[in-house]
Amino acid sequence: MKLLSKSGTPNVPAKKGKKRIRRKTPVYHATSSADIVLSLKPVLPLYMIWPEKLAKKAQDFIRQFPGDVMYAVKCNPSADVIRTLYKNGIHAFDVASIDEIKIARKAAPRAKLYFMHPVKSPEAIRMAYHKYGVRAFVLDTLEELYKIVRETDLGADLELFVRMALPKNNSAQIDFAAKFGASQEDTISLLKESRSVSSKLGLCFHVGTQTLDPDAYAQGIRIAAETIRKSGVSVDVLDIGGGFPVAYPGQTPPEFSEYVDAITQALSFNELQHMPLLCEPGRALVAEAGTLVVRVEQRRGNILYLNDGTYGGLFDAGQQLQTRFPVQKICEDNIKSAAPDQPYQFAGPTCDSLDMMPGPFMLPADIKTGDWIQIDNMGAYSQVMRSNFNGFGTCNALHIIEEDLFALK
Image (cartoon, rainbow, N blue to C red):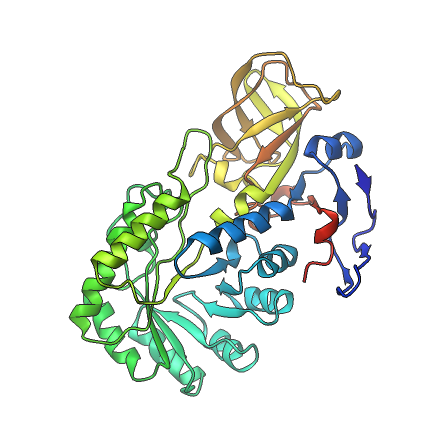
């Protein structure tokens, strides 16, 4: 392993013809996270982002999905992540706030931004449209439509997306219909109202996060087609949202190709095969590109007290969602432990007894205080969810970059 910089803003030399960039995150050469951990012996939680994994995911999505892909920035709003995705073909981004718009616009100035939060402040709409050049907005009420029209001064280039609620999806980790989305009847009315003020009119839905059943997308497409027919309105684009899953211990989702097949067949069956298509993946693009390393501060039986927890980067592992992440012990001698695995619970560093993660997390029986644990699939909904509750929010981050990825734009 070679440390390229100990500073927070390493000056990365550019190859001929490529732009020199400065990074806020230290950059390392390394082939494994264990090499880094055994070199640094981190006291604080440590994130490692692997851009080559991001690049591969982006390329796979673009190659297989039968439409345009926009990244849901909320999953991981790192400028380096956005730049990597843009460089590898993701040129559209789903943003939900002015802060996300600022980050995305700075990291990828030429990208198309979709303001996909159904309830936006008037000030956010006006700033997005007039200052940052955002033209695509979502809505699920008549009030929001009026707000968008008013704050954009009825821009002639508005692209409006009406968000439709779907029936409850039992295969999703979180069902999204409970908070946003119009009923079919209201969606029909909103399509009619929006058509006259839209340069491009879209219909969108979201099946829910970590959806394990590809048929959920087929059902959404069927309902969307029925809604369009009943409205009698010409719709220009269909956005089927995100929700594509990642493999976690205890969950083996279908291959992405099965989702693509279900989507393609549903479009054809419902005579929408010629309609332009969008999707909004977040977790599926970035989760596997992130690793979080934590330290065991104390062991009590099968409970491991860590230096990070549900108020930090492990919210999804808490008692509400109980996500089981892939874990492994990083051994001092970099040789895998011979001890058999056994189930553990995790406890976070705060004084709150809710800061517990039931797992079970399978780790060697000989794990002890001072050992480091590598937690994988932490590129989504981890670093962005951190708080400083009880003063335990501080962490460090590294980008593990191959030579030919230095000059990411």
